[in-house]
Image (cartoon, rainbow, N blue to C red; front, side, top):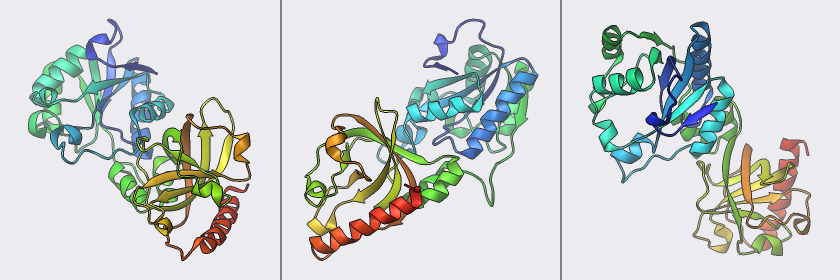
Length: 312
């Protein structure tokens, strides 16, 4: 899959194209179905399939005081989109100037002249152009003017529509298993391993602490069974992942840390390494314990539960 970072960097002769557009945050199963359908429609018509996605998220531009909390980083989004069979993605820089285009200006300058669109595939509820003034009816009228086909793609979902909003809600509630069902694969968070306060090591449960600037929506506080991956290491490691403020020790800073199950940390030098955490199931919520002994006893139970979930 090719990735274009500017409209004018698309090589001459790339098209003609079949196009769809959206934020595609998380690239959940509904997104994957839309992109797969686009790829198939393009193949049938001997077109190139291309998706237009936006960075930063429009909410972050229009409401900077409440920026969008994204399910995953742009790099993760592109990696997941590449699995759907489409030929290319245009990452469109989203700005107030871009948003100020009329619906016709966007269709003419971006879809027709810029991308060479012969087919545009969208949902029935598509909105585009200044103040979201463009609708599916607007697009069909412009298609007659500029000579392209409009195809509508039905909503996709089991017991309701798949949506990024619903995935975010599930993650905020800690239901990572249901979120994975909607995403089509486990949710991940990634960043750099940094030094913590070494309390886990003192209790016999050393942890790899994720940097505060990690990418990906951090699920609700609690303990999770999951997998840890480190840069330049082909192995995946079973992990008990803890999220929270360490209330037993009157902590205030929210942290994400992973204890690698049944691996001695001297054998795993990971400080400064990139780490990706894959969430499989929530074991329990965050609890305040009366003393270290009670906490250590619970941590042993947590490790047993993680082993049971992961089969390790």
